[in-house]
Amino acid sequence: MRMLLFLGLLGFSACESNRYCTQEFATITIEVNGVVLDDYYTIRLRTGDTIRRDRPIADKYYEVLDDLWTNKIKENGEYFLFEGKVGNAVLVREQFKIGHDECHIRLIEGRTRVDL
Image (cartoon, rainbow, N blue to C red; front, side):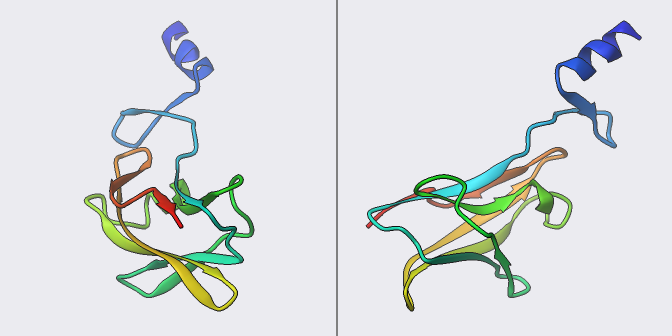
């Protein structure tokens, strides 16, 4: 019982498979240097769904996908397209393959920094 309490205090929880996961919230981001995007979104290529966020995570850092998608995508990965616009022009177009383990999303392939 003391061990379970200790793990809980460290910020771990058990997943369905009895694997212990951190309570951190994973987010895959892209750093865009040289311009501030007016609009950005991620497209799930398999379905065409568009995923939008209200604002950047921080200056130059834009969210591609987060842990809310962990149980919605294939474990071995799916393709997503991040697009960033200034005005009507698409200046950033990067493809990502994103999967997950039992706890969090994970980047399989894709550039996480773009210099314009």
